[in-house]
Amino acid sequence: MACFFRRRIAAKLGRTLQQPEEVFIPALSAVPLFKKQKTADFKLSINTLRANGVLPSGGDIQLQTENLASQLKQDSVVEDVSADRGTIHFTLNRKLFVQKMLEPFEKHGEDVTFGLDSELFDNLKRGTTLVEYSSPNIAKKFHAGHLRSTIIGNFIANLKQSLGNNVIRMNYLGDWGMQFGLLGAGFGRFGCPEKLKQNPLQHLFEVYVQVNKEAEHSEVVKQAARHFFRQLEQHESEAVSLWQRFRDITVSEYQHVYKRLGVHFDIYSGESEHQAQAQETVQQLRSRGLLKTSEKGTGVVDLSPDGDMSSICTLLRSDGTTLYITRDLAAAADRKQKYHFDEMIYVTDKSQANHFHQLFQILLAMGHSWAESCQHVPFGLVQGMKTRTGEVVFLEDVLNEARARMLHNMSQSKSKRRRSWTTQRTRQRKWQSVH
Image (cartoon, rainbow, N blue to C red):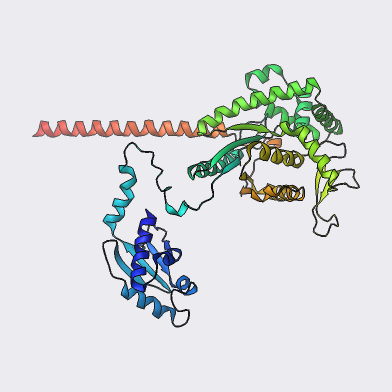
């Protein structure tokens, strides 16, 4: 619709200045609407016309503006033309505007994508977009802090799909790492199989908070956590079996929450799927001379411009176990090979901005030029959410409270309507009895 009006105004300018209408399109833009202020619908930048050689670049710009505005008359499309500081404003014919606005809805039986058939999108590059969002850690209840990534990521995925892209929606679960060493060790100390059956995620949450408190003051607990995670990385059956149980419980619980939110995913992936690939990535970095050993015995990549180790990224602990970024490197390469994406978008909070900056740097250093098409979309942190200390608001509690309040308000509204109706009937009867 906007393109129709933009072209009609451009044609009007073209006839006035004896120029092709195409030269005016870049200089015309829609004016944002304001509730308490009446505005024009389109504006023309005289500076743009001067820069493009349509109008002389010298002379008084305000005089040029007023002179051109005076030559533009009202017609069936434009009902008012006014001059401002270097800008000409156009107000559209309201009746025609509404008619064009409603046109798409008159196409009965057709799949109309309102506003998306604009010629502004004709030159838009389309392809396969992989969007990674939500991505909570398993064995923990879905809390309000996860909601932003879920909603923003889902919006981006919907938008990309509406614009004609093939969209892959991925939930990359945090299902590996030292935190599961803590949880595994903690469950051995504080876990209860019966409570796990009754309220699985609540019990795992309580165990996680308790073991974190213990770990703050106990080297024994920390050592037990490292031992359990080492067992996981070495695929010892008992540790893997317990971890798999935690993962299955979590995915089942999360799917229930996503259904309530109207969110879906094409793929549930996780860090655990890239353990072997992470070790392969480490070998590739070594063979390229990118991975170095620090004084502490950790495996690091030097990202400093001068190669002086002033900026490093750690990929391996001193005991040889991998880190989150190691698995992210492996996951990115695996996704490119599997899905052949044209762009990949990560939706996480802004605290991970440096992580993704380093991730993309290392991928490029490894020779993966497609890393240029990877993007991190950050958002502000939800303050005060700390799972390990138990300071969280669970999303399901928020949704339940919202539903309860809505039902209460609806029942109150119905009661008011009934009382109002009863009062009116009573008044009517009294009036009839008097008259």
